[in-house]
Image 1 (cartoon, rainbow, N blue to C red):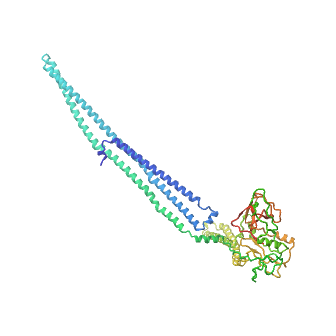
Image 2 (cartoon, rainbow, N blue to C red):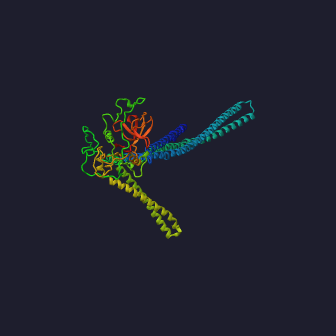
Image 3 (cartoon, rainbow, N blue to C red):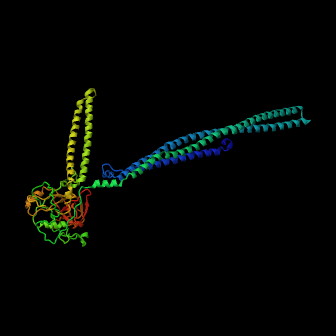
Amino acid sequence: MSWGIELWDQFDNLEKHTQWGIDILEKYIKFVKERAEIELSYAKQLRNLSKKYQPKKNSKEEEEYKYTSCQAFLSTLNEMNDYAGQHEVISENMTSQITLDLARYVQELKQERKSNFHDGRKAQQHIETCWKQLESSKRRFERDCKEADRAQQYFEKMDADINVTKADVEKARQQAQIRHQMAEDSKADYSNTLQKFNQEQHEYYHTHIPGIFQKIQEMEERRVLRLGESMRTYAEVDRQVIPIVGKCLDGIVKAAESIDQKSDSQLVIEAYKSGFEPPGDIEFEDYTQPMKRTVSENSLSNSRGDGKPELKFGGKSKGKLWPFIKKNKPPPPPPASASPSTVPNGPQSPKQQKEPLSHRFNEFMTSKPKIHCFRSLKRGLSLKLGSTPEDFSNLPPEQRRKKLQQKVDELNKEIQKEMDQRDAITKMKDVYLKNPQMGDPASLDHKLTEVSQNIDKLRLEVQKFEAWLAEVEGRLPARNEQVRRQSGMYDGQPPPTVNTCAQDRESPDGSYTEEQSQESEVKVLATDFDDEFDDEEPLPAIGTCKALYTFEGQNEGTISVAEGETLYVIEEDKGDGWTRIRRNEDEEGYVPTSYVEVYLDKNAKGAKTYI
């Protein structure tokens, strides 16, 4: 099978076919180029997607990734990033191994095609020239033969005519001989030209053209083979990344299998466990007995008295009156515009029949002057405007212990780094002492002193946080007895010789509680209350609220608010329809719950007071 033999007369068609083959190759190059661009764009989008959902540094999201489900999601994002990298590899390999390679080959192919068809056209022009020479020689031979034949006939006519002179006959004979000789010469020239043309033609159709067409055939076959190799490379480029892509997918599956719901549940416990115990049961209160000022043996203060001595906390010798007694809180007047309080089921006054237990205790405790203990928690100072105290006293015991332990570990790591640096400087100083030409040992004294001072400072910090940690760990076991007393009932132990409060208590949500004292305790003047109340700390804010309506606080214990005003919430609604709020350190009181929209802080513990 040879184009030179089978297609000896299809020069023009072969020229068109080879040009079409080059066009097909360029079309395939364009296809691969667009595919590489798609892969690159896809990889870029995958990377952007992975980056978009990566946790931001130093943000709350980083804390969420301690859960196994979030860690699995983070692993998925990382695997997707690697997966995107494989698509970039596909794009790069297709560009280098196919697009650029084929583009160079197309240029070489065009040059080779141009050279082959140039040789073919040159051979065509040569054979056409030989053919023209043959035609010219043939016409000349034909013309000379005709001339010789006419000269011969004229000589014979003159020779037969008796009236013609001998000289004319001789002249005609010579002319005929000359024409005959010219015809013979033309015949010989024509014969030589024909023989030469046949030889050229034979070489053209059996040597030159087959050789040129064979080169064109080989060129075309190489083009087809190269296209097939490029298609194979196209598939191999994808196949080469399949193992790595498979590893990426296996990594995602492994991350999914690593999710442990029990571990996540335990982490939730560790993150939010306060260390307190639930409050105990509230005992039945018999209102059929007249409420007396003196606390009897059957009162609430002795409801759980089991004879066990309770811990005494150090405090001032004088009791303190509760500064914000809720007295006669009236039901809120209906606002000008429609509001939730206009319905019959609006917030009720604490003076109505169904009152919460805390409000009935308020009336009971304020009927006569009483002595009370009021101990502010240490955490109260640190909760102003959401600031975090250094000792984490705003947190529950368990959470505080974890934070302190974490702080101690961080400081120990910093101390270790400083000690390593000190050791390195000391070794360098020894080297300088042994080899003075390498440096001055005295130049390191300042740095060594600075590092030692840093270590001393860090150790002091560690001692401080370890002391707080020891305090928290020492108090945790003792809390069980305290928590059992946080159910809202009050243990009335009668210390016969102590004139201070029975005990201060801390509720599980970080609030302040009081214990009812005996009637026989020492009475305190108003001036004493004022002097000691100035030293107390305000209740911590547990959230904020926005006033939906204007409220005129005309009764004792209430506070006026304007519509749209933002204030701090220091005590939630106890079920009586009133919320305790604060405007600043000196202004606080109660407003109807339906008049405000409350936003509680997730991390803050409710500041509740059981009165």
